[in-house]
Amino acid sequence: MKSLIIGETSNGTISSGTLELISKITQEGLDFKLITIGSDENPKIGSDTFKNTYMKLNQNELSLASVANEISNIIKSESINLVLASSTYVGRDIAGFVSVDLNASPISNVVNFKIDGDNLSTTNSIDGGESDYLTNVTSEVKVLIIRPKSFEASEIELNNNYETVSIEKNNLSVAVQDIFIEEKTGPQLEDSKIVISAGRGMVDVENLKFIEELANKLNAAIGGTRAIVDAGWMPYSQQVGQTGKTVKPDVYIACGISGATQHQVGMKDSKFIIAINKDEEAPIFQIADLGVVGDTLSIIPKLIDSL
Amino acid sequence: MKIAVCAKQIPDPAIAVTYENGTIIRPDEQVLDDTDRYGIEVALQLKEKFDAEVTVISMGKLGTQKGIQQALQMGADKALVIEDESLKNSNSLMTSNVLSEIAKLAQADIVIFGTESSDGYSGVVPQQVSRYLDLPCISYVKGIEINDETLLTRQTITGSEKVVMPSQCVISVTASGVEPRYPNFKDIMAAKSKVVEQVDISSINLTAEQNQEFIEIKSISNDKSGEKHIDEGEAFNLIIEKLKEIKAI
Image (cartoon, rainbow over all chains, first blue to last red; front, side, top):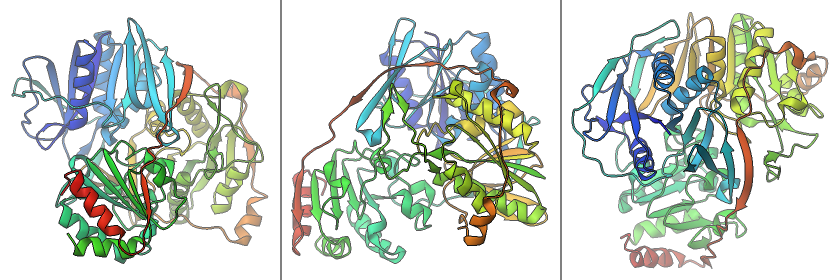
């Protein structure tokens, strides 16, 4: 199977999601071509073992439709039949655009796939990770959108050996007026060893200060459920779950989270899960290694004081 | 200005989804997907400013049409819907193919979606529709400011960016940033007389095809049966001991 990985840059190098795809495809023994999308100047994304084309965006233009044109042309001219993208903002946009050009519906939320000759089967995680949904993909070109953290990222030595294509705007481009970079301080959700997440059980946005204090003491990243992100207590970038981020820290501390399946999808594979919730029947306790039934607002301050 | 806004009817999200041969079993009464309320809110804010016509577009089992009514109750003007046996278990490409054809029938300048449905969550339909319609796509919108020009704030991996909304485009709206309105009694009554028109499959140019063969659903036991303790004031010590035991602190 001739494959193409749609990658992204992050902080001047290849994003962790892209590295996960590279390691999986290498494990499968497939040759691949990498296209990396980003706006960084001279990122370190090259390699002597695979070919990488850097599609450099002008950050003042929203031009992913142009990028998709280039990628669709490459897929057609090089007869590529397996396309992998990460389930990120950019990955989903590109996979969506390209799938129309190729008349090949993408398979979303893939957590694993198996290749057997020309056949490819995919696994999707459903019911908050309680079931695997298995299918064969029958289109000639198979476009897979992979959930982050599905595969272990491999260590790759990177250099400046790659080709750069500057993306020109086209009739579908939109001018960007302002760019806001969210100042991220402290550990990041995706790569922190400890994640502390808050849910409705924190009762009031004011009480998130306890979560922040505890996170400081434990050098942990902070996450939240969709409910509290919708309520405006936390930015969307901190949402853990189906529509947010997937995390797999060593320790996940769920504070006042009932554990809806949509949330579990984003955290159930954490190595050790601690849950604090008033409701003894809360589904979060089914996946917790240590469950404490009690008032989060009284337990967390005590934890902070004794750390 | 004409706006088409997508509304998906989904099984009550409080009840676990069930499957038959890999296809979600849909009861007669389905509700409006909450994630669509954000897109509908954006459509209605544009309607108020530009006197736009807002058409709800929807595909799938119609049943009691409760979800369609809920979208109309928020303030949309009418609905264009399609249900056909051949569209059952459509993949994202078939769905976006059909919805873009319906958006054309609604003569929409602006087509608005949530970012992904709560039952299928493929998360690519807005992007695909923009491609079918050859329109700019502004995905992951989390804020709108309507003045002389309309500014959309979209979520990015590093923060956000602001773009001027083109006169014709496809938008996907995230579940934050706008506050969906609640209909009052008058809105609920008014929705009953709004037109819900059914589109026949023969008027749709469907080129996308099914490309997945269902194999099976395997259940995995997630039950860790970990320790569970009732807090009587000292449970915080258990947490600290455990964190030490696993060398997290």
